[in-house]
Structure formats: C-alpha cells, structure tokens
Image (tube, rainbow, N blue to C red):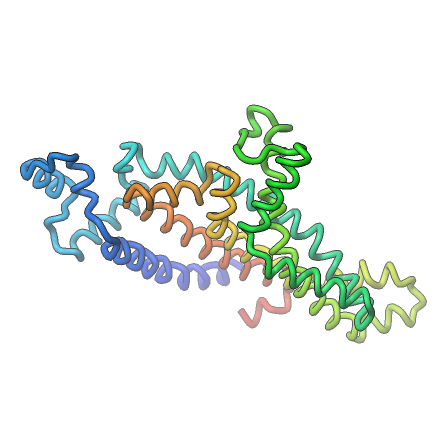
Length: 315
C-alpha cells in the first residue's frame, strides 16, 4: 500500500508544479496593474518604483516565478493588496466555511441520490424509474443561482422559515448555523444528487445481473437482504470514489451559491479579490483550490484501491 501511495505522489508532484506555473502565468495576463492601485491616486513615480522593487516586478518573469514558488514552498502566499493581511490567514479563515458547506451538500446529495438510484435500478423500465430519471435530469439542468433565488423568494420572503442570507459560526450558535447553511447546501446538493443517482443506478444494474446476486436469491434470502447486503455493498465502490471528486468540485465550484447567500467562504473571497484586483489573494485561492482538487483525486484513487483490494496488484 505504501508503494502505491508513493507512485501516486510521484504523479501528483509534477501536476502541482504545472498548476503553479499556470496560476502564476495566467495572473500575468489579467488586465490592470496592481502597483498603480497600491500607489494611490497621485501615482508618484518614486512610489511606483519602490513598489516594483519591493515586489521584484523588475525581474524577468522566470525569476519572479522561482521567487514566488520559493515563498509558496515556505508557506508564504503573499500579502493581500487590499487588506494587507497574509493571504494564508485569509484562506485559513474562509476555508472551514466552504468545507462545511461542501460537506452538508454531500450529505444532501447522498440522502437523495443514492436511495433514488437504488429504487430506479430495482424498478427498471417502470413509471417510477422514468419519474426518478426525469427528476434527476431536472436537478442537473436547473442552474444553482436560479434555484437559490427561488428558494430565497419562497422559503425566506414568503414563508419566513429560514434566513435569506448570512452566516453564523457553529461555535457561536449551532442552531443558527444550521439554519443559514440549509438552503445553500440544498441548492448545491440537488445537482450532485442527480449525478449520484445516475451512477448509483448504473452500478446497481450491473451488480443485480451478477452471479452472486442470483445465487443469493436462489438460496432463499429475502429481497431486502439481497439488495442491501449483497448488491449495494459492491455497487457503492465507484460511488465512494466519485464522491471524493464531487467534493473537490464543490470546493472550487461554490462561487455563485456563496455569492447568492452571502456566505463568507472561498467563493466570495475570490470574487471580491477579482473585483478589487487583489492578485495575491486570487493566486493563493486558485492555487489552494487546485491543490485541494488534486489531493481529492489522490484520495479517490486510494479509496478505490482500499475498497476493492483486487486492484492493488494492478495499481
């Protein structure tokens, strides 16, 4: 198992290096000059020259990249041009919020998608199967921002059941935290539920046609035991690994939902940074998001091998 982890890490390291090059290079293509923003309205030439020297912008781009990469390796993501706070501290403040939102969204997706996929596979070709597929496709097709706005209008404005926006830390008030996180988690979870439903249905259909399931039924086991203990246990192997990838996508893709519900997470941080041309924050957030997604892919590979030991020799 250790050898497998080391081989996966050998693939991850050059990927991280390539991602860092892309993040640094794309930042150079962004319009505007942060130095002019920092210099103020007067834009004194002496101040501009000092800032360019301070941030080593007079050096060639490869030299700037090597210096920036050295800072990243030491855990220094730079200083926010807008707040003058370390970018790492901003990320540490915002990351737990997005992780909580992503975790709640995955719970919603599992609670809806997996049972729906099981029922759809069991009742293949029936009206129930078609109805579940229609609902799943609807969840995949409806944009998150539209669903979020409709929930705010209905649940918050008309029914006044949940707060329309805002965020409360669970350390301050766990009840209010759950109330503020329910709607955004539901918005993100419904789209993922459609993905999980389709994959669960496909996996269950393949497993239900296998020999060991037919053998279990021939032994006289009741249908519930056959489905839950024999079929579902093996069908969940690809679902578990898929979930890690979906979780990584949530960390990077919750931008619109966090903006709509005014949740101070990763998404809102990067949107505010783009609007204010705070390039250091943009670089730090994009780099951390990319690293997180790559690590979730690594976890998915390892989970697949752990859950299915037959793949260890092939890996």
